[in-house]
Length: 444
Image 1 (cartoon, rainbow, N blue to C red):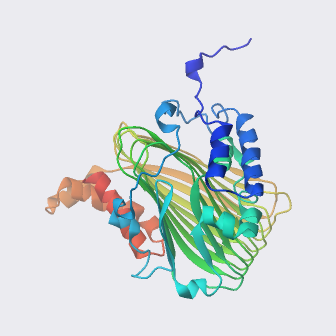
Image 2 (image 1 turned 90 degrees about the vertical axis):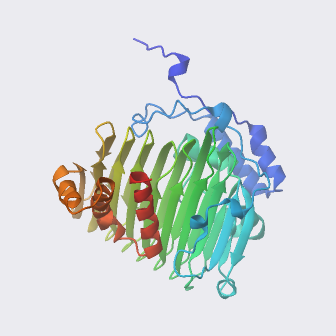
Image 3 (image 1 turned 30 degrees about the vertical axis):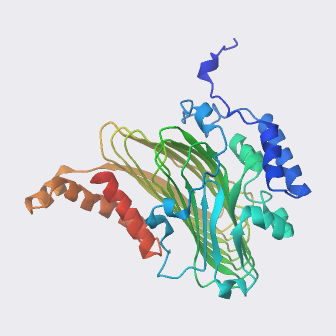
């Protein structure tokens, strides 16, 4: 028997049109190949229904987003880098940065690269400029190997309408000693479509941090983003992503790392802000000996909802992936982690590990974790786990009996819970940022 659904029960799509796609291309005088690629992505978008009942979406209700507010492109309004809080602009390590890119409301405000890195042939610039000045490189890598328009409705919309981003290219055998830093900050409401494309060629090394944040606003916003991390044979990329959107922002993002033969990817992903985040975070180990480590931090409070969907694909033998996510939820917040380790047939001698540890801080909060394995080889070492816990009164009472206030006692225990994850992060300043976020959520 057919089931009739009320129109209001189905998620509404944002009201963008093909004219919006063409306007983006016209505004930046884009080359023909990019115009054609946007048009192809738009066709995929129009022919793909809004996700709702698919397995990876059926636990995520985003029907309360108001597309009449969020479904228009954010426009630059004269805001400067000074609008962004200082914590987002601070260097990743020490006082030096190899490059600094600040984009506010889609407009490039600051773009610097150290002479030493530029002299090595390293490219660090905004994606719009790269599409004109480094056309062959961008055409080769942009949404062709990692994130693709066919990955889903929002990936297709991003491919058609992305309007800002960062492009990093590290040539073969190049070592970028100083870290690169990009900031995406929004002061207005609407939709932002920011793209990160990092290409580390064979035997090259780089470190990069990307910050996402926005100013508080009454109207809703959407972030429809994509991150592509491509590491060539023998390459090494350390990548940190920290998200702190305002509480009126809905994030829909696709993020994927491609790791080549004997290459290393160390990926840190922190999620603190937004009203709702739906993020696909994937690693493809495509070369023999590829090694990827993914560390995830999330902390939801009030009525936030974080849905983090991770996948580790072993597409070559003798590959290793290691994923650890740790999160907490308080008040009436909800979190969901869905993880999967996959291997293709004959991909022997792989080692895949994934675990998500959850800390419930109130009776009203809810946290779900769904680990999974899909293994088509028979000589593997793969494991997964999910754990849940609460704050026990006994250690809190012990600390309070020593003169420590209850909030401080809770904070000390929560810091201890996250310590295993924080120790995986090779940057002291990032560890301190995450600890500060924990304190803000607990004490204010």
